[in-house]
Length: 256
Image (cartoon, rainbow, N blue to C red; front, side):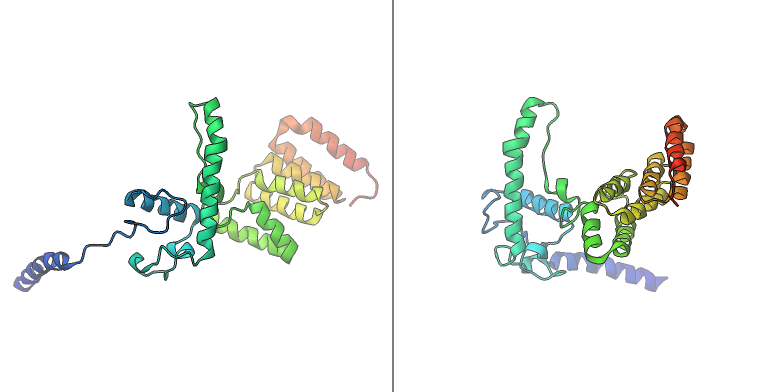
């Protein structure tokens, strides 16, 4: 017991000595150099909060725009350097946001001052470096790798980002995307994504209705009728209209 008490006493005595011997942490946001867009007289606190807003809004780190090594102390970074292209992009984007708020949003606030609006980086980026909608990403995957690649990408992004604000995984997102695909003549992809949505939203009337319409458009009569019947179960008020769609399908010759 004496040895434990002695050890505790030594720790208590040593800790203040170590803390007192530590050099004060450098304020890396004080006295900034090479500011072109932000105010020259910006305070250390304001600059730090601004940089934090960029990082959180785009899910990036200091080394994305500034010269320095990831994981190293910030006082080793060369924040004044313009070497990295992303810093130039950030300046232009910041000017764009300022112009939007000053030239356009301000006029909206003049109309309804009680409900002011302000655009920020996160407004479009939603925590991602590139402000792409999930539909944009799926279009790229379809064009570059085909339907299987696009479906794999969707499942991966949903698993990673569902519940965040980065991408829209709500009930209507995929049905509307499937409708757009069908309008471009990509029926196989449209059916695939509409079917995925019924798996995620098994109680969604519109999801099954859209899937049934896409099955009908692709000549799959039996699957379309089954989809319409499920949609009618989920929304009995729509049954008269849906029964009409089913009757029209059953009257069509030659469909599967």
